[in-house]
Image (cartoon, rainbow, N blue to C red; front, side, top):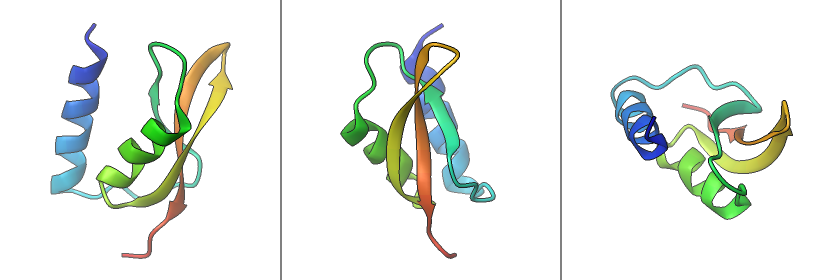
Length: 71
């Protein structure tokens, strides 16, 4: 499964309809080491969150979004 494909599909969906903002929402599971700056970039792209942070979930690196922006 191509991870960048999932991210692109996810982002294009987000643009058309903003998801309800949930603090600490998991954006995606990182295929390699997770980068806070990349994660933040991905979270802010949709315009819903203000920052992203990496976390470990079920021993996999995940990108989580924080800082809900008021619509």
